[in-house]
Length: 86
Image 1 (spheres, rainbow, N blue to C red):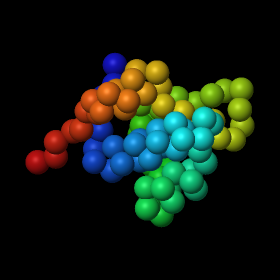
Image 2: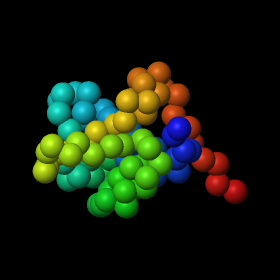
Image 3: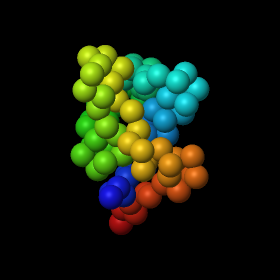
């Protein structure tokens, strides 16, 4: 089950997913940062992994973060859950 995302997490997830689709391999954090126009994304990536949106490929040491299967389906259907902050 995927937990809702904050707006910042949504931007990072969409950047990572778009780069993954375009290149057919996982992007680096630097590539995600550049694409999302952010200076750092490590905190968001950690939160996305904890919420089930990203998973780590254990057989790779670099470029090892990819969208989880369920999250990728939601991304391609544009059905991303965003947490509303009050």
